[in-house]
Length: 295
Image (cartoon, rainbow, N blue to C red):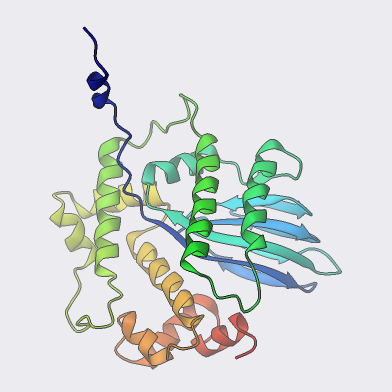
């Protein structure tokens, strides 16, 4: 005889994802504006509100018109340029989820541009519109606001995952073991990237080859699978983590630049300043002033 207790065997899957919103902003730029070549550890999604933009990803060139959306996966080098004589306005979102299979599927989906009016564009634009409505000058974001922002981000990730959910969409070239090793290397690098201000920055960190060997695999194989999964080398991955965290901290005017340098593991502010300028072409102070014009 069947009872309702038999239903106790039904479970939802456990979820243990590290989802991060690095930043989101709306900006109006003049004709001639240009963003130098860069690549990110996470995804970049850009909605062109008005004007025109030229985006170059590798050898591919895209011309965005008002309402178009472009999605750039992690590790893809790209440039953005205003292609309108009257300037342009855009909304840009930088985010990441620590799910290598999802990243691989999005890369192999091999679709960057979502033209205005297309079904996918319409769905993405609805989420981005919700986020833009929360942009208010001088607004103090509450805990409730932050949860709402995160819920919109999860909604966007759900829409993106539907692009690759067909039975034949999963990559065959990346075996589960390769993904596992790549994820372990990335997690170890993140663990070493400890932003606790009280940590001992003089303690030597494990080298990338040491990390790979500790997993019982050769450095050559570890570097190969990491590049395959994340689209960049472990060293570049670590640099991107530092750069994104540096940008987040510099945007907080109450934090002294010397304190930020210490948090990121630099013994001297001058060392951090030189490295940040290599990354962005600006000093930390110049970046702070550009990110917060009132400072």
